[in-house]
Length: 151
Image 1: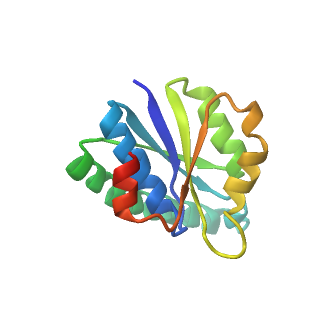
Image 2: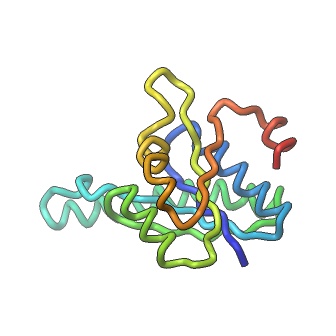
Image 3: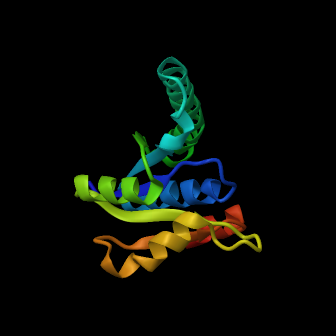
């Protein structure tokens, strides 16, 4: 089964990327893989403290994922999978794509403020010509109605 890969983070635009991936998956019979990446610099503390922080980060990710997963299951009939990685975001995204041949599309949310679309969209857009799959960039301020109409 083909899957849409979407990145779970704390950005506002993440919501539209999640919605888009779930709606497209529902309409095309595909799956959704949700990737959350923990930056390694978050744990540069003493070993015991770093482990506690790592576990707390994983718990927050799982709780955040469950909110999206419930909506995807209840509203779209899609049961997403969660992937948690530690490392640099672009490196981990590319690694997941390389490891899972069923991932067919990377879905990213674009920020709509004056700073630009966001670091992931910027970095991955530069590499888009050499990626093995297409990237779909979903505007962060796209309304729910427009999302429904285009999916």
